[in-house]
Length: 241
Image 1 (cartoon, rainbow, N blue to C red):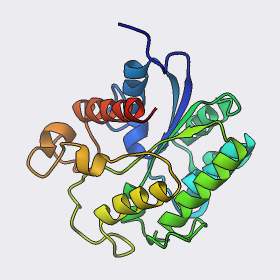
Image 2: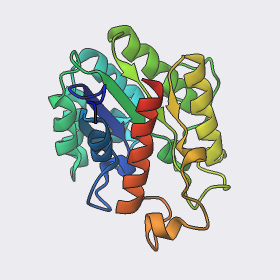
Image 3: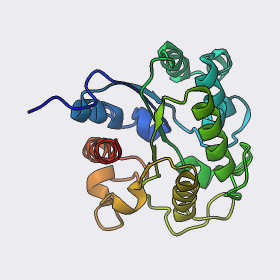
Image 4: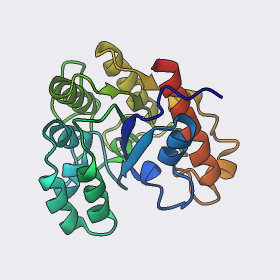
């Protein structure tokens, strides 16, 4: 088999608990991407994190805040916030800070499910013109602009949130999960940034989710599900780059 075009490349994967994968230890989506592509990729996922604004110290781990750190290479705010949050966050912040962003080839943001459920503060969808962390669309716009201005060589590819059992219900800001997936697709298209649409393309649904997520959990993929979505993320890289 010929070497992948991603062999020798460096990536970073940011996201929530689905990316961190501490609930179902085993192969993570990030590890599956590395396996399929040959890329060296750092897992920067953290449970409960969002694309847009969040409460107190967790806000430092929202994508729009991380964009500033990625652009500057300074993760001191994340390191300080992690000491207050505790748990796995000090290790997460250390992993984030360990990446040399001047050498980074690919960045994969995988957020949205916590923006959907978020309360205190809520995460409204917003408009295509927004460019602040106060809304979901604004956080994506801000992150893309900040990162691609500072690091124009960096290739971004987003992934939408996957289906979960709360699909079809109103989230914290009154919107449904599909609205966040659609918002990401719309804003990224306007910015000419590719997206892997896991919400529509992933086969996890109301009929089979116990197989892919396990009993009692309608949000987090188990090892089978992590392998599945990681493979789809890797396929998205091959499709777009």
